[in-house]
Image 1: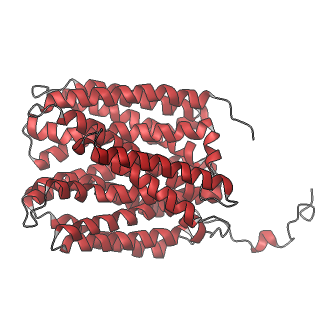
Image 2 (image 1 turned 90 degrees about the vertical axis):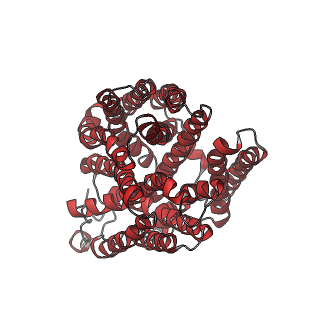
Amino acid sequence: MSRAALGVPPHAAATAPPPPALTRALLLLLCVCAGTAQGMVAAVNLLITRLAASALHPTPGQLLWTVDAYVIVFAGLLIPAGALGDRYGRKQALVAGLALFALGAAVSAAAPDVALLITGRALCGAGAALIMPATLALVVQLTGPADRAGALAAWTLALGVGGLAGNLLGGVLGQFLSWRALFALAVPLAALLAVLTARRAPASPQDRAAALDPLGSVLLIAAVLALVDGIVEGPHRGWDSARVLLAFGAAALLALGFAGHALRTPRPLFDPRLLRSPRLCAGLLGTALSFFGLFGLFFVNAQYLQDAKGYSPTLTGLAVAPVTVGMILVPRLAARLAPRTGHAPLAVGGLALIGAGLLLLAGCDADTPYGRYAAWLVLLSVGSGLCMPSLTATVVGGLPARRAGLGSGLNTAAREIGAALGVAVSGSLLAGHPGHVAAGMDAGLRVVGLVVLVGCALVAAGYAARPRRG
């Protein structure tokens, strides 16, 4: 068939610039950006003791909000932030997110009181909400089908390495320096990454047809904020407290309001009918489950190592290093296997290993040799490295390429909600065993591990289901 018959001008091939490629240097830059945003979630947890004893004299509730303000704002803004990247360009969204992240870190570092510290944390969370979808969307935009699996594996690895780096940095700073040092270090790092991104990243297409849907955005943001607020407050206030029940009720009503609005408006932020795809739902559920398991472990792990094993904060950060072994080595293998096996076996098999690792870790106590504990961490990390690239590819691939930012926002929102739930569930069960950290860890990780295994069966069913028509 001739070029004219296809509607392509004769000179198009000569004038159209080739699509930009994702170089190793640019992939590394995007991975460092994503890892920095993820690392800030973990680092603050190991500074709580120093913050509690600081001149700010925070109350227990203020300490909680110092940790949670980042997560709540981060999770609440992810989907609209991804849509903003689709509309105005992912590069622009990433640079803006890094600048906002640096501003928030500077406010926190210089905060004279707890209110400004929490404000700075919220600003960092808003910056992270722009950073994460933009980095993933750029990876999708700049890779072809043959290279995408490997690039997604590298991006997934960056999240694990970022979490480990956050633990290590938080432990070292918590032991030897002021808590302000963490935020002070984040300012030049984020500023440098913003400059490098502005110079190195190619301009991304702006999809003016991408809907911003102000009313839908407000409803969805409010629904996610209410949901995550209920999750993080549950362990401390009680799951049957009026505050928590009100938060969950508001989240349900706001979500229903968003769905009703999205079904009526011609250009919704996110069409809920996309969730009729069993495969997309399986990817979202699997993503949430993987982080539910990992962060359930991370929450009790620091207390187990310090209180039951007597490790210092720095040694605690080092002791969790085995959890990155599988995240570093396995994603590349998974990327090579995916074209032959498909995503379903890797996603389901990886989740099963995470669940098994959690159940084995649940049996650890103060007398458990570190080698055995480290072996179970490696098993869990292998499962994580196996499933995460396939789950990410499933979610991002469930939407058109031009909506990669929205798909990335959905994917990361599932991660953060799963992480918040994991911390809440394991934290609640740990709190039920005051003075007995090992017993609380046993109860918490058994429940979290069983939930992952049950959810794994649902993910398998979603992958196996036939796509719905229409």
